[in-house]
Length: 82
Image (cartoon, rainbow, N blue to C red):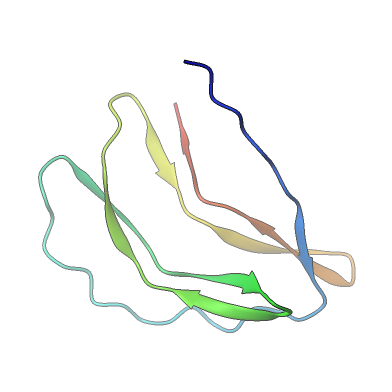
């Protein structure tokens, strides 16, 4: 079946707080640790804790991040890349 994909650019005028220190659990076979990140919700940053996701053969996970874009900040969601 076909899958629809939606891409939304997220910008904020406020820098994200520093990443929180997380205790990463021991490795799990067949899984990849997705580190915690600051998302954006209702005009403020909101922390999302790290978690395990099932590994995808032939792919590596690129974590979410914020980059400065002029006088504001742009959010890039985590994703799988070949």
